[in-house]
Length: 105
Image 1: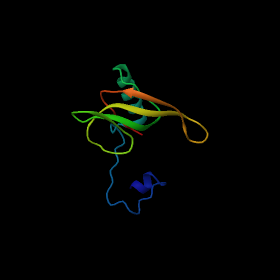
Image 2 (image 1 turned 180 degrees about the vertical axis):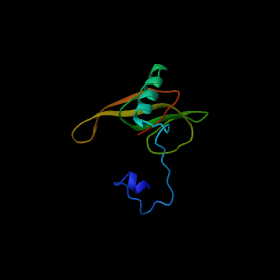
Image 3 (image 1 turned 90 degrees about the vertical axis):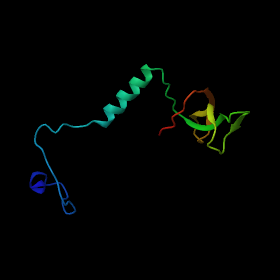
Image 4 (image 1 turned 180 degrees about the horizontal axis):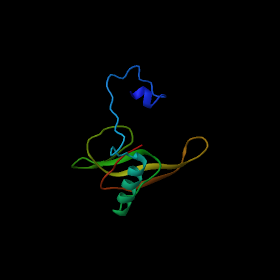
């Protein structure tokens, strides 16, 4: 029945399917992401386009700078490379003092 309703659908590997003609709803993931971003911004979140190249961490003692390793310790600042030139090198590095970090692609 799915093949008859949707001739473009490859049904050769479908074992079971269901289709509701009304009341099923739909989901727009792009609208969800835009809405979440707007809400976060209204709450003071700053979105930064760039890539992290280093971090300063607090290890319940002395503060140390790390650009190559170690995932323990609380991040207190992040160095972010922004404005890449044609060689792929960062024209500018900005240090952000942070309370929380979310690294998302």
